Amino acid sequence: MAPRRQRVSGPCGLPLSLPLLLALLLLGPWPAATHGGKYSREKNEPESPAKSEPGEEFRMEKLKQLWEKARRLHLSPVKLAELHADLKIQERDELNWKKLKIEGLDEDGEKEAKLIRNLNVILAKYGLDGRKEAQMVHSNSLSDSAQDDGLGDPRLEKLWHKAKTSGKFSSEELDKLWKEFLHHKEKVAEYNVLLETLSRTEEVYDNVISPSDRSQVKDDILHSKHGELKDKLRSINQGLDRLRKVSHQGYGPTAEFEEPRVIDLWDLAQSANFTEKELESFREELKHFEAKIEKHSHYQKQLEVSHQKLKHVESFGDSEHISRSRERHALLQGKTQELGYKVKKHLQDLSSRISRARHNEL
Image 1 (cartoon, rainbow, N blue to C red):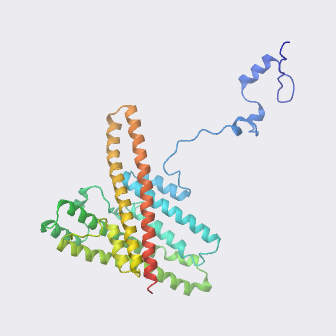
Image 2: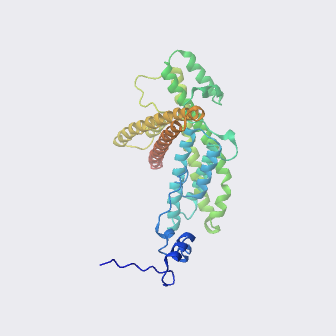
Image 3: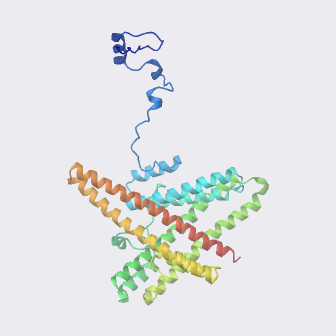
């Protein structure tokens, strides 16, 4: 028995002859498809994924724009990775704040004002506020050429010169000490930026505080602002005392930690209101934190080397070699960004623990 021929109908249910069917197929989709019906190709076939661009992972439009601006400024890969981590933390904090605001947990606007201050610090730190001279030196700088730029403070310059010419330091110890000097310079710069951004955002409080409770709340906010500055100034003074001591005496045989940020945290923790058991637990966590920083620094160095190699390959290599180099560079960049975020988040958490312990003293 011959197979029954299938009857083909058009959009109105009318039978189609073979020539007419071929003509319609050549002309394109039927009207139902052109209008995006639920059974059309456009509705049922997934779109081909667009090429992912750095910055697409930011959910907030203003942070996407900042990221794109930074890329246009041609910051170094390491600085871009650091900025990426800072922006991710800023986004996390802002999204958390939006939830608090919905629940009515930021009535005085202090958390919002702090977020604005933090963003202003980021803008100044990476030269995104239009003033390039405000950019800071990172404490984990990868180039010794930064020594030629000086430390910007006669007291630090004098201490560094004394340490270099004292003969008390090996070359490795001088590298370690130079990182401490750079870290101190960064802390001073951050303090100055915060001081300036606090004055810039003063008018924010006038907008977020209702007239009925203006006086009491404003006093609380001013107290909080001054407390933040006071903590940073205390850390700067402690750091300067340490640099004076090390520059004159050299490193002792039983140095607790190597990384400047960890040294700062340990000094602050020892003067906080921790019990002996809590302090010992904090010491162990600092060891893990220092290992995390060392791993991040390793990837930063690898990223910098990869960037230099990529520039060389793009100038002289073939397309296949360029493609492989770009792929490796992208992987290193992603890993560096991921570790940078973890380091900054861990630093933020440890600093908060010390701050809470200090406030418990009051």
